[in-house]
Amino acid sequence: MPNFTVARDLGDHERIAVRIPVAAQMIGISRSKFYELLDAGEIEAIKLGRSTLIPVASLKTFVEELRQRSAKI
Image (cartoon, rainbow, N blue to C red; front, side, top):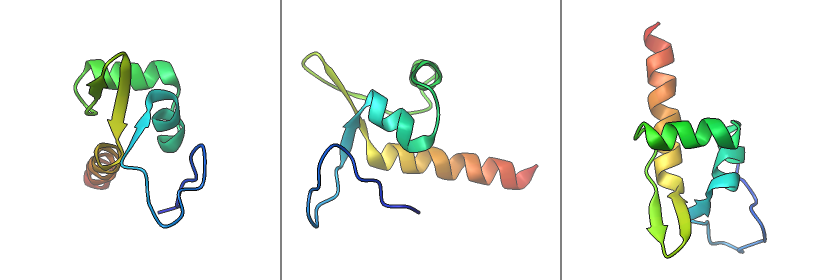
């Protein structure tokens, strides 16, 4: 899986959560589609004040589940 560089170099540390526009870009979908997935409960979100953060682990889990569903078809 590619290592995404987001906003700035974090050295050896990987981000554990990102904002919605970055999360949508990471999995290659539009922001509006991403919001649909959030509303459907497909992807986990964390509210921190007025910000919404998406755990990177949640994105990885979502993509893996999609891959498994596609393999069954």
